[in-house]
Image (cartoon, rainbow, N blue to C red):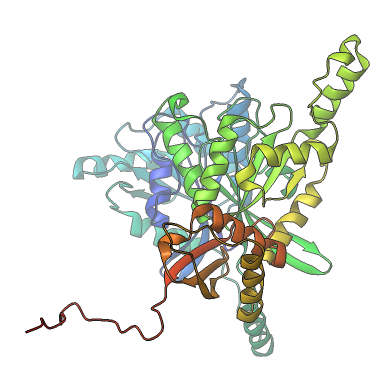
Length: 490
């Protein structure tokens, strides 16, 4: 990652608003309630031609000697400390309207101990009066104080010019290696974006932390811990090939009637947007809870967005332990006859429940023990390769011709659907254009049959198949211009 600038400060001083202003888009959730940001939210940004990574953090809300008894608050504080440790420049945000507070002094003392260069941004300086009050923050002992307004963009340019100037400059490589680097970079693929989605408390953040091998996002038994959609860069080497990913940790998607406040509303909105911008969605289920109605609704959102999908049944170790206890107890005979016991039985049951995602592979995992996390990545790599398939037109038409021969389309009011030929339009998602005599004769059930036939012929595991129909004029039929109607008979 390029030079890292961390935004820190006490709660509710406008850190997330400043973060969004600098990166130029709404990434972090902004709200009047203190403590909205919990995880480290990062984004690649550029200022006057200089690339860097900007990190938003949760508010530092503890004075020296105080202890965080809440597990979420304690984890948020750890995330702030990690951001400070990895930053090369720190922007300390304070509130110009409220003036210098004891907690500002405590945060400043922590930053001084880090030894990192620190710039003070006196936020909410929207008027000349509040701008003049920013001088008070020079008491914190840092060299420069910048009056800014994150909402209106005032003073941000001067702040960022100073911050970027403090980033270490990397010397350019020698001429020979520069040419090699450029050539190699041209073949480097963009990182694969994986949205980790599901209901609250199914283990989404735990899976991400287990994959990257560090506490990158906050994990707690409290549902709704994750609020922002957090992008986590991740690299893994397989058979000598280095593969790059962006793991998108998302808030748990609840039923609409259970969304308690505006913060949760925006959290769910961010999660749904993550499905839209990802390459592959990993739908996480809780093995103990099984497939619930909300799991099906989230699966429906993945299908509507036409995204590739892998289903991860998490907490498999807990499910196995529960089955083991039931078998060894006196009530072993009361085990439900249809209760899935083995991995294969559970996978079949999941695909029956999520029949509309029956093309998605089912992987069983445990973020706690690391069970099958390697298989989860294998499934992701396989689905990504399937997404890139380009089917030759001749083979595609042969497969569709065989499918039509096996099962003729139903006729409607004396008209029968006729196929002329098909071609592939795009790869992600796999989209095919079918030329037919009449578009309205291609029904949804028959589309499903043809899509399944294409999948049997060419694979496409984990990939939705999109079929579009277009009517082709019959041979000898001339298109008439609407501006030149047929002349009337005399």
